Length: 354
Image (cartoon, rainbow, N blue to C red; front, side):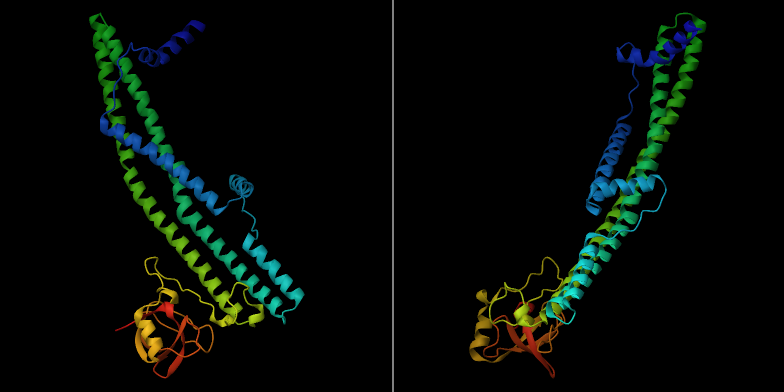
């Protein structure tokens, strides 16, 4: 029995052993197939790394990530928990009620707390969208398509070893009958190897479709990020305007003395390439002329602007309004007029026209 087992073992190990010691001919894969194999391995490597770093971005706490992983392994629903924004919001709201909603500080705390809770909800939506539209397709590739490719690749390796063994037996055959049998075995082994190589090649060429699908997922991820950051930005702009309505004694300590809290400059969302106009210290000659003559000029609005008080004028991007300089007005502002509507407008949102 032991002798039979050793004989079987030698037959199994022979192709590996002889190939290792250079005693058997090794069938090389064609260059195109080798390139596809390399590309597939690279795709698998970077997909796993991107997945890991995305998970770290969405959930920086490693303990929570491990807990969520265990719930997923046990096929149980992950318990809903408040995130840091929501916890901070609850804390601010509770403290605001403690100090009194009728006081300036208590009211401001409540407003901040409500905004923090909105930020928390936006964060949860972003995480959920990213997990469904970005992480899940990447994980499906690793756990599905790549496993199928690995299985067929292993079969190809076995067929290659069978082919090498058949070539080696043909080379050693001396008797005519043995040589004829070895040639038949070699033809079968070559046919099976070619067939498996074709199957593997077709699967590997599907990596191009995988890249195209992952590109769409990447677009979805970027869109989710842009939506999330835009929501957060709008929440904070609205909060800043609400806080700007409080008495100046409760305004930001960094604000210059004598300036009203309603005059806080609040930028609106704009393309990265569209930067605000130069500050007053670098004012254009046209602006200096407007101030010195106390006349009027036409100005094109660069960005949308929502008035923070009744003394201001809301603006729409690309519209043309009439502006003038008013004595003793803050240097960051001009008086704007659109038909019968008048109000202060920020200079940084305007482009004076000739």
